[in-house]
Image 1: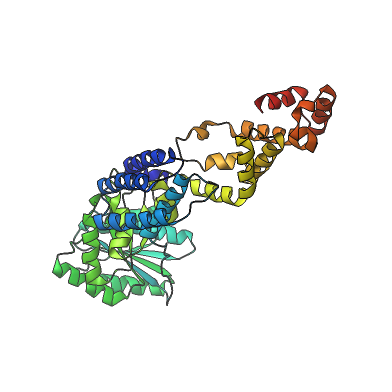
Image 2: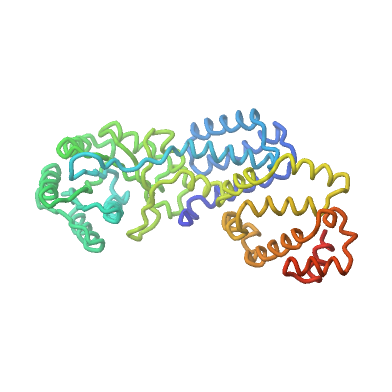
Length: 421
């Protein structure tokens, strides 16, 4: 999702600033949450997210943030961030695969405005399906733009997918003729590139209804330019009213748009986003993944996985007992060893660092060095007796040499650990 940097960079930066401020509070008061949600509301609206989507999203976040107990093993702010992530995923909707059931060849009808990226998306989709083992064919059904068929033929040659073109001026007949050729040729999926049209152009929408009735597509997908902002919602609603869409493909998600359309579309239109176009390359069409997109918007990397690992690995009762002893000045090497064991249960350091958001200081840490330090430290602690961990002052030269031999380390490393403790 790195290709989304331009689209969501500004929004992500603003949200991270809000989260940083939240994290400064040990205990969150209702007014702290209200203040954070006000800033988040402004950031989302500035990113061109539909106002009703923003309103509903933040109402649910506030209700949950004030009503749920935060995890004792986590900073309360992390729980609020998690709630926002979960609600944002809900807004983006569940991922839905292409419907490719039925008698072959199955038909995918692509519709949209002129300039939305239909033709290049048709080629990308055909290539993607071909890579999944489908025998694909493209149909150029735009008799109004002379270069459309030629463009699709060039793209088809690049991806090694056959393209059906015709000099006929009737797009419905072009589609039927192409479909018949695909059926005879053993093609499993046909992707139809239709002419661009405005959703308010009734004669052109009637033409689209005729095409759909002729070929009975399993999918009717609207190609939407993400850079059109909130206008994309009206476009989707207009096309859906005319031809009953089954899904959306958002294009130009690698551009400089504010990105709000991607967040709003499912919630406002009720239609699933099936793919996202993230570049000019023929493979730059990604299956829509709400979890990944939400994490990217929030600038989280894969921090949620770290939180889940922490919750699974950490013994809450042990941590509370250690915290109590720490307050009384009784934190021992035994407590430290227990903490280290819980940390190691979360996985290799390199994996944890990889899951951190880009720009976090941890990303510049030498993971191999950190991992080896943890291994040596744990080996030293495991080579100590329970009494030595509770009372490190009894560690004389003889005991240190024994521990060094048992842990494969040196007396100097043991002394360094003791100084740090």
